[in-house]
Image 1: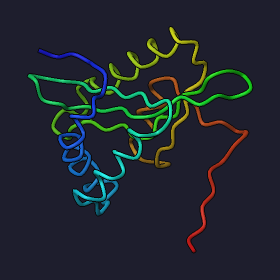
Image 2: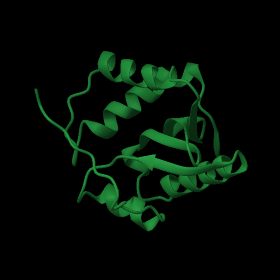
Image 3: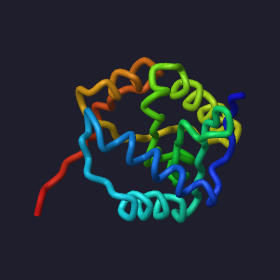
Length: 146
């Protein structure tokens, strides 16, 4: 059985393990351990106006979206902070189902824009593009290592 439901605090540890599994491999090759990943997900969960979803398959979490609402002069925006799918369930349509569900949910609450960051040139950029997301020409993300 498959279904999408709201993210709950009790899911943090299971989602932490899924997060590590997803991001400590290609193409990201991150170096998350349980403590750092758990702290990241807890920080997102504790953010004002948090909204998260999980995709469950046979009572196991295999997909997660976490983010928060934010007021903007044109209305409410939703920021996707993390979105990850179990590596054994990628390319099965779960990610697209989750985005579609989230978009319907947000539209019903008068949220008019979704923002997210993803790595340029990786398959994630293509995934979001296939799901109707665009690269804006009015803003860029810049970083500086200090």
